Image 1: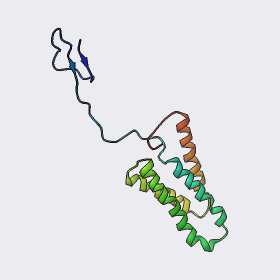
Image 2: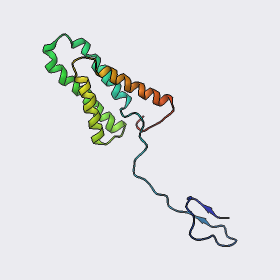
Image 3: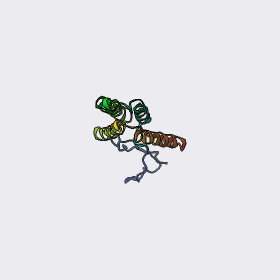
Image 4: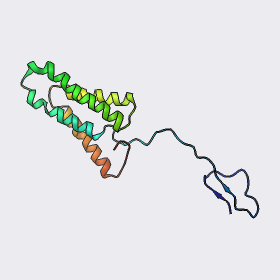
Amino acid sequence: MSAVTNAAPSPNPPAPGGDDTIVRPTRIEPDSPPRSGVPIHPTAALLLVAVDNLWNLADWTVISWAVTVPCSFATVFLPTLMIQRLVKRDGWGRALLFAVLLGGLAAVPTSIFGTPVGLALLAWTGLDRLLGRKGKGR
């Protein structure tokens, strides 16, 4: 009997009466594990919700917005960039895109945009796990 470790048909028939094992090298793909359905890591979404809700404290002090807006952007942008790059293993372009997007939402001087978006991303992550889909960076 002949055992073939790869499903491809053998161009050479096995020797009569012999037990030949044909071993073929398998093709190794570059590091490209399947992407999860969730584009943002849950920690980045949670950070967006937390920083966005800090606006409730600063809504009435318009004078401090010159400090609060850039600080809110930076406190979401930098961690999201690192989380997406190092934990979720996104490329620099994709990680930068999501960091700018979430940082921009956090910098809007009300908690109207960031909180619903962050909660929607967290719900998406929860549904993904509930349905049993596993992706990279989790």
